[in-house]
Length: 161
Image 1 (cartoon, rainbow, N blue to C red):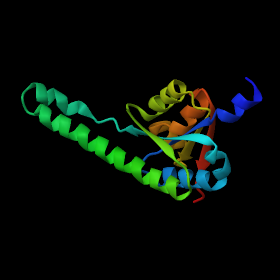
Image 2 (image 1 turned 135 degrees about the vertical axis):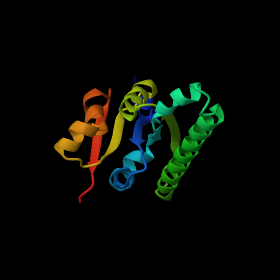
Image 3 (image 1 turned 90 degrees about the vertical axis):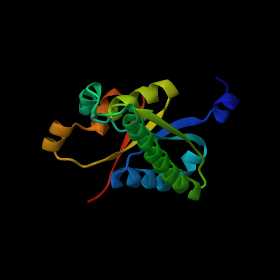
Image 4 (image 1 turned 90 degrees about the horizontal axis):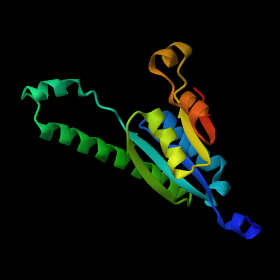
């Protein structure tokens, strides 16, 4: 690619957002510390619809849970995710940065890595929940999984406690 082509091609950066204070901190820290780079990048705000425990679906097959209830739960989750991304987008706008917003459903670690590959992301930014070794072993660590499996550079922002 020639020099002019390199200048016009924007770097793609994705910031994974969830409802936690750690995620918000990672967003704000990134905007403050990489502001100039982000002005020349394509910034994607990404969130994952939480996986719902559909263990009660068995009861629905017996006629206890109407399909409308399941649809209502899914619609509500999408509204919550949309509001979450709108708030993150507002923070970015205050820094003069425009964004693209993406919502996916599934297991967060898998959805993030799949989106990175699909969207050809070059830098993934995640907040760290600062869990200890035992909690990471039990609950898993999205950031650790992404560091080891995402097809791009990964920046994990840790909030000082």
